[in-house]
Length: 168
Image 1: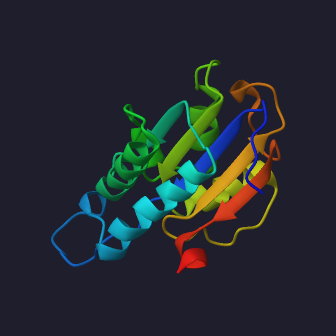
Image 2: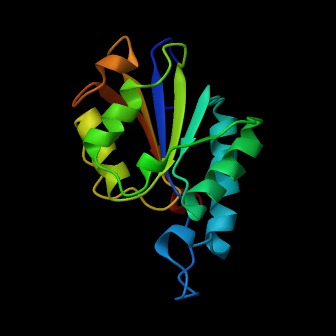
């Protein structure tokens, strides 16, 4: 169910599949692999097809998340991405802090980050069970509160859950 309302919406995207080929690279510096480079544009097109237009894109600065965010932003025609260091190796409490600090003018926010934190955040915000959001998976949540400052457990409901394997 991909629909839009006047409520605030959050789109959580787990970074696309990354490469483990170079054992010398730190976790932070791992690039996207071939599948990741194919999945990110696919999922960006899915967002565009459903007229998802975020006011703000927040991304972990880790290379695989950064590249995923850049591919999605380009497809959606969005120029600015805010790289939020707290989205790398984070916690639900940190997600809540980040969300509560969003500008009041933001309506639709897209967040590109990592597991397991992104799965936990979606589960706690929506009181839902995803188990594991796969790489490049997207969860759309509609907030049931008026402002981002009110964000907390159970403050949202699931609009959709989409991921690349659904389309292969």
